[in-house]
Image (cartoon, rainbow, N blue to C red; front, side):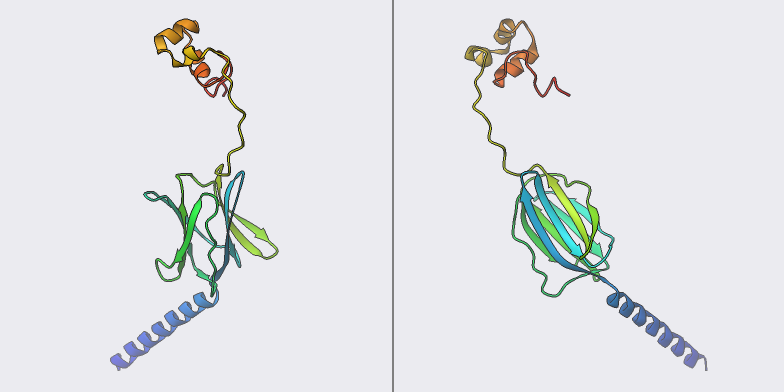
Length: 188
């Protein structure tokens, strides 16, 4: 009698676990698209989802990468990953553990991502990750130093004597700015 009761309990437990797994699979969020754009203000990655999700970001070095883990999210069938753009050299996907989708952004340089955010739209939720300032540099005007070339090429002791002993004037004169003018060191 006891054996029969134990096997019924085991069967009920197995059915409950199976029902839980089926429920999770039927109600799992879906990653519908991944998009990458680059512009003069930086690089932007958007992960289009069918609803709000939990996520975890993992920055990695050597080579530089940003991993986005999405527990409880399945990738849509035939999900196309975008080509490289801006700071992003490649995009890969996988499943580190069952039930978790992982997106890996291979980065061309060590740049910290801004705080990611979930944006709600008419077509669903987007997880947005942005990296600032990696767009094409603005053209710069030719530098015309106002100090004599000998000031910037002279040893520090001679340069200090010619600029009144002000070490900041040496830095600004050497950078092609007028001696004593504004510099990154003096402007807060």
